[in-house]
Image (tube, rainbow, N blue to C red):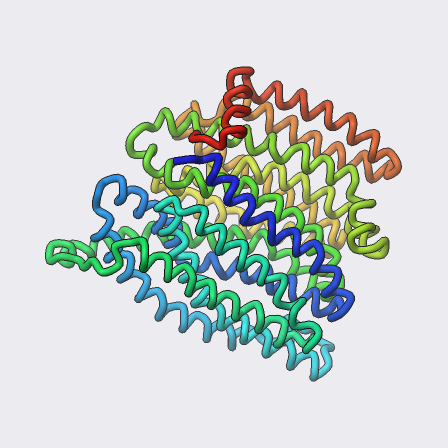
Length: 494
């Protein structure tokens, strides 16, 4: 498995659409209005969130395909997974109808919305609900592709669909700036994505294989076990992303959709940064699943090193953005948006650092069949987070939401690392803990210092660069650093 190359594929798959998003967001805001941009940020968040409503089976598909391929049992496994996908399609259609008609449009449009705006929001929401079957089944078969380590093709699809998600509204703006047109273009792309993923699987997996008589007899137990594992992953897949973007809905309910845009734009930047450790965890997931069965010590060492590396990758980027947040946002979106958004961005970056450290341990817990642990953690976080968020938004507005969001990320990372350490102490070394503490302290210091002295951002950036170099020396031994350098150059196997 060429981890470096696959990670690069994933990075390009996430990064190229981000470049278009940087240009598209301000243009859509100016041409369609910030109220429509505010709703589109909810749509973009919902597209990512609803994609997790696959009952945890995308990760189950990836783990089962990887293990079955290693054991030479792929044909019967694919036949079993196809039977699950057919059942899930029926559930998705019913779920789409429920989501489309259960939520009143007035909750999204505002209590004093004009009838024309209310109609736009209602139709757009129905269109978004119609994308649920495509989103879920695309994720399902993407999981099977990742189990076969087809990361190159997966990320070609990701680039195309990512570009379409932000590009479709831009292409449609000259013809119509209404929400049904803008959202309809995005939804059309989701159905095209399903066709692409399904087409690859039909060509490269043993698609025509059938379950034999013994398999038919035994598949009830396998189905029960698979659904139980998927249910645990679903809890994390639903609750985790909900806690990531729930603050936007709270802000929209307390304030207005225009205010959501000022908060959502910096949060989208931070969520895109979190794609880096998430993508690395996704690349490592099939290997972690195999090592959990064959070599737990090697798996623990991989978790520790991968987590340290991802934190070090994020640290200089987060510090640079924190120090230069005001001028960067001013150039990109204008001074009127930059002034309220810059402090929000700085505090969200603190959460970005600590959330980075949770990604690989989270993937490990699910790859080793302990998804029930991550589910319990997220359920335990939900109520305290909701109460704290409501209090913070009511008293401190969007900045308070940023504080609570980062605090919740810190709690989540602590729980994931503690659970991983309890399974194997080699997976969470002292170097990893020292790296995370230093990186978090640096991000918090940057948020406070630049807020007090905005003109000192450039000088602080130089100091933070020196600090990052020191943190790298603390996190990586010389041999590990040289090994990492060679692998990055060669993009060779981990």
